[in-house]
Length: 179
Length: 179
DNA sequence: AAGCTTGTTCATTTTTTTCTAAACAGCTTA
DNA sequence: TAAGCTGTTTAGAAAAAAATGAACAAGCTT
Image 1 (cartoon, rainbow over the protein chains, first blue to last red):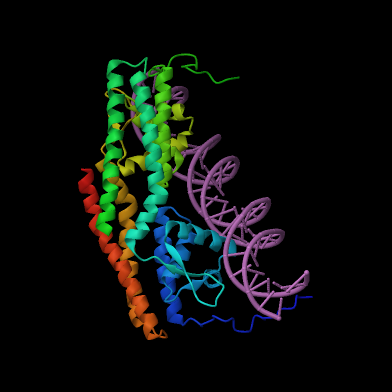
Image 2 (cartoon, chains in turn cyan, red, green, purple):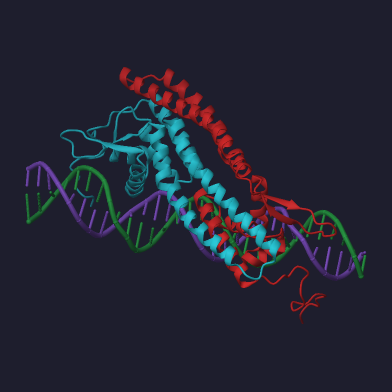
C-alpha cells in the first residue's frame, strides 16, 4: 500500500513557474557551454551542469529546483554546490521568510579565476617549490655521475626553477588583465 | 622448452649503463614533480611519469629504456609518447646507425605552454564562440519571458561574451610573458 | 513530541578512464 | 624467406572517478 502523501504529484508545488519551451532551450544551451568548460577544467560534468543551470536562471534557484531541472540525485547536487561555493562560483541568496537556500552565480570572471587559482593552482605551485629544493640538493650532492651528466642535470633543475618563477610572475598579471 | 634466445637475459644489452643509486633517487624526484603536474593538468599519470623520466635523463632515452625504468607496459609508453609528441613536449633525436627512436624533452616553457594552448584550450574556445552565438540568438528570439527575465538573460550572455574576449586577449599575453 | 522540510553524508553502484597484454605491422639482417 | 627487433594497435582488465540512494541531522510546525 502506497504511503499517504499530503502533497500528491499532481498538485502544483509552490515554485513551479512552468518554464516556457524557449526558456528550456536557452537553459540547455547555457548548460552545454558550461559542461564543455567543465571538461576543459577537469571538473565533473555535474558541476558544469549545476553552474550552468544557475547561470541560466533569471532568478536564484532552490536546491530542489536544481535537482529537478537536471535530474541529478540530491547527493550529487549537494556535493556539486559545495565545490562551487568553495570556489566562489555560486553564492547563496537570502530570501526572507523562506527556510530554503537560494543559489545565484558569481559572474565576475576575475573572481571565478581567482577561486580556481586559489583552490587548484596555488597549492600545487607551493608543493612544487618544496620538491624543487629537494631535487636541487640531491643533484648537487649526486655521486656517480660524469661531469657532463651532472652539468645537464644542473641545467635541468635551473630550467624548472625558471619555469616556477615565470609562473609566479604570470599569475598576478592574469588577475590584473581580468580585473 | 624455452625458446632459444640469441641474447639471453644475463647478457648486457648495449645501453645498460647501470644507473647509480643517487641517479635513481634524482630521477624519482623529477618524476614525482611531473606526476604532480600531470594531476593539475588533468592528464594521465603515466604521461607525467614518461615526461619526467625523459626530463631527468642526461641523455635521450630509448623506448625500451623508458618501459624498463617506469615498469609501464609498452602500450602505455607508446600512447604516452604519442600524446607528448603531439603536444610538442618530447622530440625524437636521431642517432646514426641505430634504428631505435631516442626521446629528449622540450624544455622551453614557452613551447610547452603553446602546445597545451593549441591542443587543449583553443579548440574549446572556438567551440564556445559558436555556441555563444547560438545562445544569443535564442535569447533575443525568446518568447514567454517577462521583460525583466529577458533583461537578466541578455546581460548573462553579454557577460559570457566579455569573458571570451578577455580570454582571447589573455592568451597572447601569456605567450609573451613566457617567451 | 511527532511529523515535515531541507539538505548532508557516505557506502555502494555505475560509468569513465587508464593500463595491460597479446596480436600485429614494418624494417633489417641472416 | 625466416627470424629478430622496434614500436603500434586494440580488446578487455583494472583502477579511478563520479553518481546514486538511503540513512541521517537539524530545524520548523503542529
